[in-house]
Amino acid sequence: MADAHDAPRAGIGALHDALDAVILLVADDATAVAWDGPSVLPELTVGALCGHLYLAARRTRHRLDQAAAPRTSSVMGVGEYYVAARLADDGDLSAPRPAQVREDGGHVAARGHAVVVDRFRALRAVLLDRLTAGELGRLVVVETGRAVSFGDFLDTRTTELVVHGDDLASSIGRATAPGPDALAVAIGVLLAVVRHQSGDAAVVRALARPGRAAPGVLRAL
Image 1 (cartoon, one colour):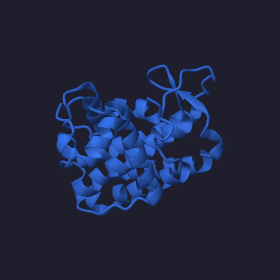
Image 2: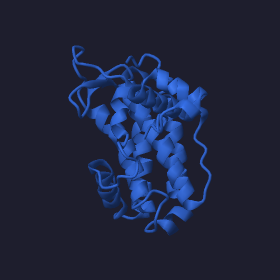
Image 3: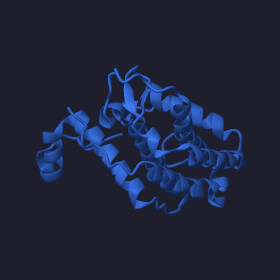
Image 4: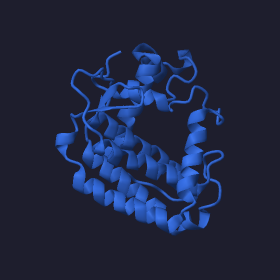
């Protein structure tokens, strides 16, 4: 299924908005107090959630350092690419992906709240300096060996920050307010995932006639 209309392309500004909103939350005193306590995500501490957010954003820098894929590469749209983030069973926390998220996030969190805040701010400065509109159309090879546009990859980072920033805000009893471009990008990416996963007819039915829809059609992650 084509991904031609999967996500709005607010791009770089959306990522910066989402990152700024997350940094405010991570630097909050309430986050420091709750660092070793549970987050709203099962089996993930507040610190480990912050660690996961940092690693999700840092992957943008890694992709910037990566050589461009050849134009002959097999290219995925954002829905096909990001569907890999969707758990087959949203309650299966023993699956390899959530287990790795917990391990990697906990490794970052072990460095302490102040260190993670400093690393977030340093990363923001790097991305402000290096992200340009000229990067958005470049192709990058991803884990499957296929390619996505850098712009689509960037939109998945914005989505990670918006979704898990909301998890962090809920964990520490704070509100979060990423900008409208960041929210629009996240909605577009998540909709692209459910369109790829379930097909457009099933998505229309779930939105317009939920009583006739199969369970879980609109669950993107």
